[in-house]
Amino acid sequence: MASHNASAYLAVMSRRILLIIVGAAAVCLVPWTIYLADSLPDRYRASEWRLAWVGFDVALVCCFATAAWLGLRRRRAAVPVLAATAALLCADAWFDVVFDWNSKKNGLTSLLMAVFLEVPLAMILLWHARKLLVGGMPRRKLTVRDVEINRDESYLALSRALKGLAPATADTLATDLGVPVAEVTARLTTLAEAGHVRQGRDGRWRTASLSIEQPDPAGMDHRLKAYLDEKYDNELRLLTWAARNRDEFGGWAKGHRSVLHLSEADLARFDAEYDDLLTRYCLTHDKAGPGTREIALRFYAFPYPEEATR
Image (tube, rainbow, N blue to C red; front, side, top):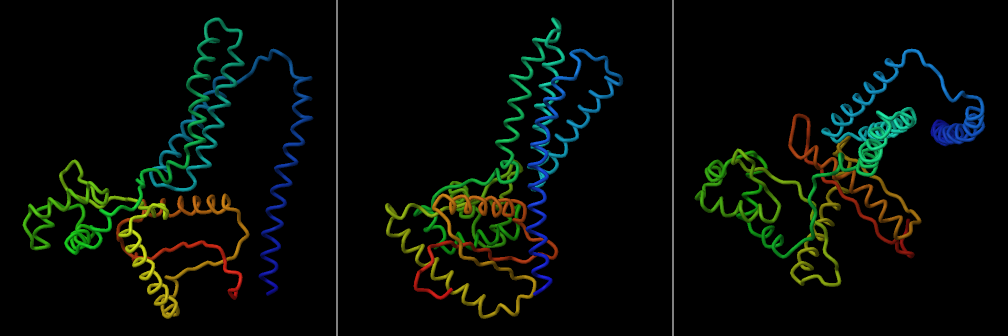
């Protein structure tokens, strides 16, 4: 208990200290900036001018390259690197414009590059950084067509076969399932139209990432409602099984629960952040590999019943 209290105290204090440092830096920079504005000369002949600018551009190149490398792997570190890259772009634009302001040769060029290239690119990097992490996941509402596909054993068998053999041709899948190639091709086409699979340029088929969301309950078709009722019943059975066998999972089971006081907007933001995390992992961990297991992930949030025991 004492060690827990100590770690909790350190966590709170480290956050407070960081906030104090950031706030103090902002306050201290105000008089420092005023001092510089009053004391610095309008003109100054700098030494190592070439080294300063070449070093700056090398840092910018490294930031872009690092952000691209991290973005390809959908690593969270890509976001702060993109923020640093955007800051360097804005600094580059500022110094180019200021230093070339009175230059007839470069003044207009620097201003145009800042307005139409460097600053807009910095804004794009800041506002769209999350797309490097979660972009590429199509989204749509659940349809009756999805229900029909999920209740058709031939489509389910084809999906299982493709998951194990992908990337695979229609001929390979037909041989594995023992059905005519024409039937497999027709079913693959239907699955592709629904967004569940895709065909590569090499002609081979692959499973496709797709997020299917629950439609608005107000206008929901009765077939969709019945299908979702079945899904929730299956969820209850799965969670009951997991609770009964929780001691057998070891390190392969994780769980968190809490009761929070949230507004509807707060809950929407929480859901969006969780969705970003889940999407990133779905896009980077969609295939079985050494040391992996198929893991069931669930997230539910709902108003807590007042009469329930917490």
